[in-house]
Length: 332
Image 1 (cartoon, rainbow, N blue to C red):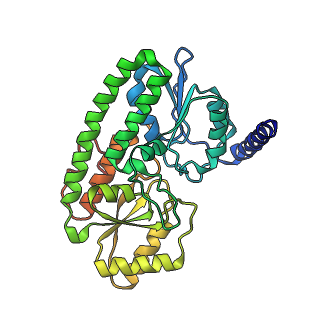
Image 2 (cartoon, helix red, strand yellow):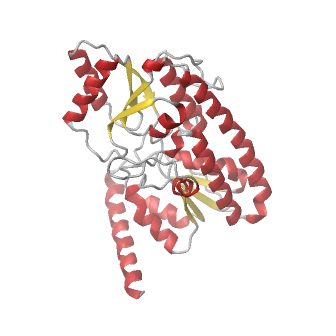
Image 3 (cartoon, one colour):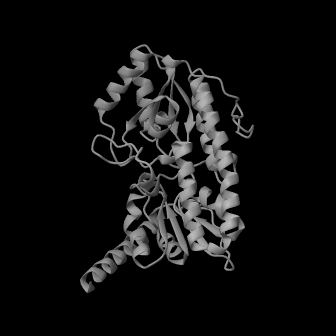
């Protein structure tokens, strides 16, 4: 036991050292914080998880989000400020399934110290075995792309917060039920709009394979240039095969992602043009991060509304330009 504890302490110390190094050279995202010494602090790693905690916790908890908009959580290294925020938090929520791969050791240390730490997507996996895997057996962590699945994640957050603050059970339940109604409406909108895309055009080509759950839930075939993690590299053969697929299927539009470089997508467009197929960028999708903080697209509902509406209209379907609730930003 002493050896195990010493090993964990050594690992944690090394991670602190790495965090110090990266904090000097890695730009810190504009992560949302709401410090309030009179309330327990709930920390979430990514915005999609934070939205669930905020929807249930309301004014009863202070929310801190580590990874802001436009930041890729697959590649994100915790800074010293992140480690301090984790230490200061009273309860921690993260996605799991290796989405925050470079933070796993830090999160594990928090849990081993007795702090309540909850991996939301992993909890969903334990409830229902519908999760996707790649050819190498890695589980796809992008569960939030399926609104019904993310509704199960809402249940996990509600249960965790209730266990943490049982005196607030009634308030948590009321808020969770109200948010669940909004998610049900969003899910129905996604089903309706994507089904309006002509069947022969239901192909979604993106920078990396983050939309598998959207495909499974809403009936559209998805192909990513990279795998489910952005740490994988796109081979020239992968791009060439996708170019051939785009030309053969006469796909009119492909999509970039807000948290990734567009260089591989541009390579697809150039390759298709060389074969006589004109392909447009259908829009920018939110995959591993939501939109700017304080905007509608900076919420989970706004993120999915934006994605579904953008995909539908670019591929020939019918969706209102301002989305489900009339709140989407329309770019001229």
